[in-house]
Image (cartoon, rainbow, N blue to C red; front, side):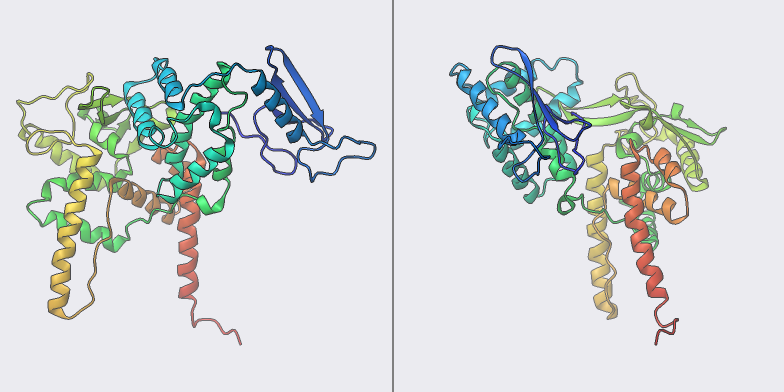
Length: 419
């Protein structure tokens, strides 16, 4: 995705636009004959005030629209749908992994194919794309998933530009506008409180049907690793002498191009995903106990996935875990716990103390929150969590410290003389 650029007033600049050091604006484009040209104007928008002596009544955007109209009229009258360009674009994506390709196809088919995929690509305007993005967000799509969808849609229209079907890409700059709007900020994900964490672990430990998941929960809450990283752990990644866990690959359970599902193992795209984590005592003890019992988990069924074997976490039937399987188990556990707690509270005449909905990512977020509350600095948290950039870490910091500040203020209630 192109890097976001703004002028000295903080306004988003579209593709081809730039601000010169003297404060004026320029727009570079390719005309209908394939020749690179540029235009300059002191005003980006009609309301801008030009310097004395400038008598040009047009702003840069008006000039751009004129150029676009001229180029569009000069183009041959062709009709090709968005879906047709999508098929052309995706057929040329030979350098990406199959899992990524499947995700692209899923996003496009779910959100675009039957929405405006059948429209002629020339008919799609900037306002259409913006309204479409707004509708997705209002229907519950997260900002990060919208970003992934934008990464799928943008190059389709870029291909149409290169093929001279359209003069400009209507997707340019749309997603960046949403990223800067506070009303579309990603929803803060609550962490488990210490009391909720204790109740969850105690219930799992003392419930026969769910006890096998206890080591999984302990490692989640004691390392903060992602579900795919946990599922992909092998005994080669555990170093009991150095007391470390190496994170260098991820287990995925995905739909393939032929519609079947399979497990795959992938390596991180960046070095931030690769890291070495120290083991807390509880995590080490849990893994040692698992190591001593490793042959109990259907030893005759040695699973090999993309060259990886000897997986740490396998169920009683010898199967490896996936994000979906663990989340499904967590849903069952919380539902059963809350059902029992509801009945006990009614019988004892007290207020019920239910567990919130819990997911793998919530357990990861809980560990991250614990580190912050224990005073670990931002950079260390970022490294341990494997965040690609500090922005994700800082977002958690901001929400945790905000909640912490509210709690501290409540503790001061009645302890200060104010009047």
